Image (cartoon, rainbow, N blue to C red; front, side, top):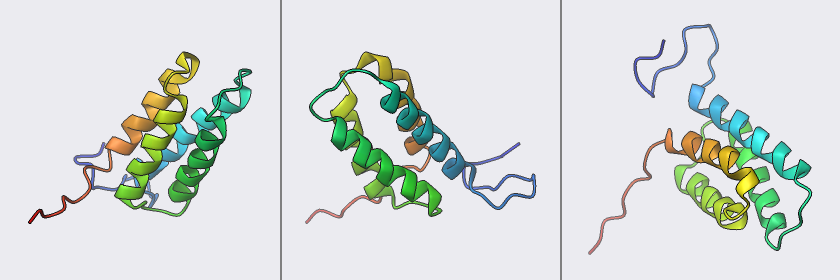
Length: 107
């Protein structure tokens, strides 16, 4: 069992469980989107950004600001498609495990 988000699993794998969770969530949403019969105006945007998320997950620890930007674009593109809501929520939950991006200092 993991004691904190920053620790690695004890199973011998060096993979960050947050990255594995993100990869799984993105893969599931991509499959459901591909199988969804309805066309909608921003479908291409959602597919492109899901590909970006998948590439970040495959590459190791993603950049948090870019991760969040992709999530916002995907949510905006498919947020009104109720059939995809559960998988979109799974992706959002996986992204949230990476924490907040560093705050910009205001002047």
